[in-house]
Amino acid sequence: MARFKLYKYQKEGVRLIERFGGRVLLADSMGLGKTLQTLWALRRNPDWLPALIVCPAGLKLNWQAEARDHVGLDSVVYESRTPPVYTGRELVKMPPLTIINYDILKRWLPYLKMLGFNTLVLEECHYLTNPVAARTKACRSLSLDVDRLIAISGTPLRNRPSELWPVLNMLWPESYQSFWSFAQTYCKPKLQRWGWTYPGAENLDQLNKELRQHGMIRRLKSDVLKDLPPKVHRIVLCELTNRKEYEHATEDFIGWLRKNKAHKVRKAKRALAVTRFGHLQRLVGRGKMKAVVDWATQFLTDTDEKLVLMATHKKAIECLRRRIPFKSVVIDGSTPLAQRHRRVHAFQTDPHTRLFIGNIEAAGVGLTLTAASEMGLVEWAHRPGDIHQATDRVHRISQDKPVFINYFAAGDTIEVPWCRRIMEKQENIGKVLDGGTLDDTFDIYEELMALLRN
Image 1 (cartoon, rainbow, N blue to C red):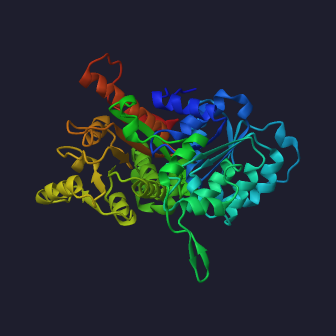
Image 2 (tube, helix red, strand yellow; image 1 turned 120 degrees about the vertical axis):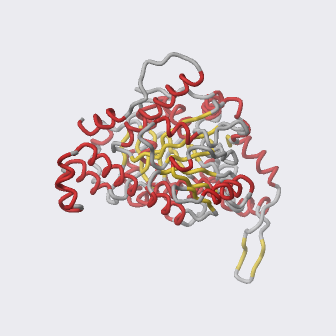
Image 3 (cartoon, rainbow, N blue to C red; image 1 turned 30 degrees about the horizontal axis):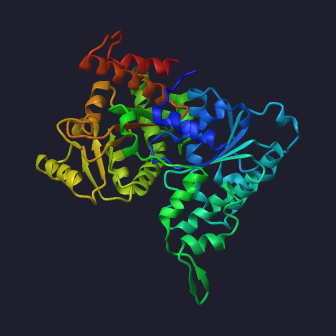
């Protein structure tokens, strides 16, 4: 089992979860490892298991992978919109973790309540701002049956305090029984012709103090800088929108080519492994694009930070530029030299230009992008050195923050082992540049081919 060493602030987060008896609002800012802290708290306290994790559909793979790889907890992921018939035998082979998404929760509610859980985890709990929504009602019903509730969100309050109340009512019902009382204190209610509205906010310092006393855990990146290394590499697992096509291409590559790209069959037979890898790479790149766009959009919405995204194909770069709804600049192989400086300058100095999208080769050298400390690698070069160069665009002398490097990899595809090997190569490159022993090579091509032969 792979083990991820917790940073000092993450260890403290686990201790705080335990100190509050597993009933907390875990509101660390994005990227500080809320999932990992929650999983370690569950693993350290066997009586908190089994646990039910409710999250957006795109995060289910991340929860399953982190639970398996970092804390050694097995899980079952529910995908179907229709639950099976409950027989009672489920209780005998019930894994420590059950993972389900908000979209299907209402249909599964009776089945889940019969299973019974000791802990309920609500990932991205800002999905539960509407008290009359079906998902909120289902979560509230589940919360009544558990002793522990861990609500997770980097931005639990997105617009106004009234949106917090449904989650606070689930977490601490004794203190937040009456919405009217809460609204009078914190929401500046207004009486309109059609009734009361709650558009405002007041007494926020008092609310913050109150929540911290009850069990809100909130740290910003600026609070934990001393605990972080200069670069933090992490894998972000993505769901594929073209999973069936990818699996068909993996199992019967020549048959897939005949159906989709018949003119390439003869050439593919001569260089099967290389051709196969290239096509699988493009299939995965297309299939994970929605997940990448959603992640980037949420990051830019939830923070005031800037973001750098790197890819290799023009179609991917154009898709990112078109679909992420924030002002961006793009540098690829077709960008004129005179434009490169102007676009980098805009990203570095214009507060409204939040997103830089670049080609790894064209934008991976000679640029300074230290206005961002967060980078996402959407597609990867075959040479780890090129990736090292690209990540150093944000990790330069003028950078005064730790840099987070996110590798967007599609779960259960060739990308995951490939990505892990690339991350290992990054460490080896660091040993050469910064000192240390090296017992590996930088050539990853043969390893990529081995992935396809296995």
